[in-house]
Image (tube, rainbow, N blue to C red):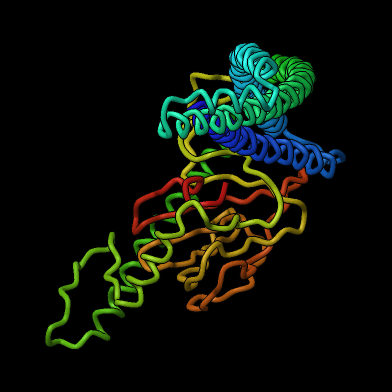
Length: 411
């Protein structure tokens, strides 16, 4: 019975350790990704150091870094808290195991003492010979055998518990070392964050002295974003109308599916349906549309870093890449449009069944409308502005519905 309890204890320890280790590994992966993002930010800004940057660009950059650093600190705090719980659990396990081991050693000492008293062979023979019947003698013989086996089992159990105690102690020591390292790292990140916040405050103060200049920059950016969104919506509807017209022309009249007669939804052929299903099955697994870089602005509504009451909206995500980077297809499909925004740069629209991915801010396009592309196919060169920023916007649509690209790309 004691052996079963010990095995269950060992299994419980191993299972709990494996589960918490898996959580720690996941947090380490996330931390590594954030550190890589911060390194990318620093490297790309280093390339842009000689360029003249607008007030809006400067505040965007420091806000991006503060956001990434804040996430990193939150993550390391989570790691430290998880380690604290693990340490407490291991301390409790060690305390409990020490008590069990102490009781087991006392019991074993009593068994050894009793064995010493009956150690002489004649004592065991006398016990057997004093039996009143053969059955009683047989039972006494079995008792002596079981007693000897019990002694061995207790010795083995003590050894196993000592081994488990040593494992727990080693693990606890390693956890203390890891926790100390995380706390030190976190303090360094807190210091860096404080410095970045001071830089941000100085920039905000500087911007507020030139409020009209900043307001004009923001207004210009917003107008350009609205123009892009409007043109994308128009071309998606056009692509849907053209595709549905072709589908209807190819479909035999008898038994043909009824066209929706809409510019909002693709009428899918069996091949198109298969591609849509394949694209959908890869949600959260799509490659990034740039080989290197980081996300500088996510999807949806966000506050202006200078005037929090001022809201901005991003229909896709904004990605920062090294100079001379290419946009690449995230999935196989067909180029359904090459978009040229008046006063802006180009975009490539790739159709994947009833899904569409769009890659905007290209200075040069490598593909043609109607061309089939595979994942990682280079689509065009990303534009680098006068401030040295190589920035691309990436969109995902299902028919005419805007989707959050972050849900579709690999973490």
